[in-house]
Image (cartoon, rainbow, N blue to C red; front, side, top):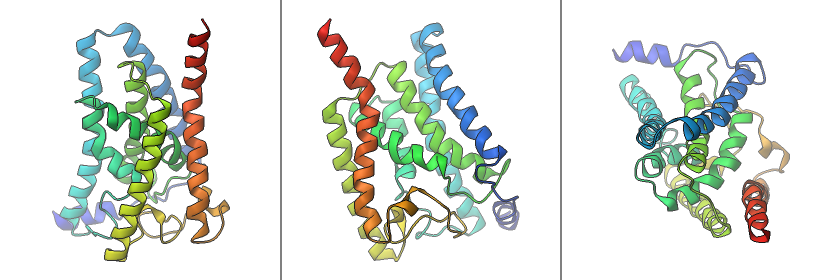
Length: 248
């Protein structure tokens, strides 16, 4: 079985960035992310809404667990590559806390993470395998599934971020950055792309926004300001909505 899983995980057609399989994934995910939460809010009863929300949470959580399990079966699990010390993987593991147990603190943190770095990752995905390989679906479920969960919680559960949420999330981002840096030093790894710019799961360099932020280590500092700008942009609709309500 190990040999079969190993061959499968390492045999695939290459992913074509900005090709049809990339554009289709983004457009399809956007359609689901926009339409489905609105449909669920308007047409489903509370019990069904809750069950679907829990299903989304466990699906995103299980997506990462399944990947790790397959790498373990194949004998290719590597603590330098597969630990949940990238933002999206850690966020995937937090999904049940939000979608099952409705943790507002987790929502506050993940909302801004999701609509900044994780959304950016969908534009320049760090995957090597194309459709219909497991790695292809694993990436999109882990990223777009997380965005769907956040939109679902916002629309259906009527959870909203505040400006204090933005501050908490930014502090949390830097705590995670510090944790990842410690892990990298201890394991000679490159989690959270602190020690070098992004590569896919087979070590190939991929173009990302970080390519425009200067050389190492300066791109890390500049990325802090870019992340803060993304956080403010993600909060801006709620700022204007609250401002309009206050004027009424």
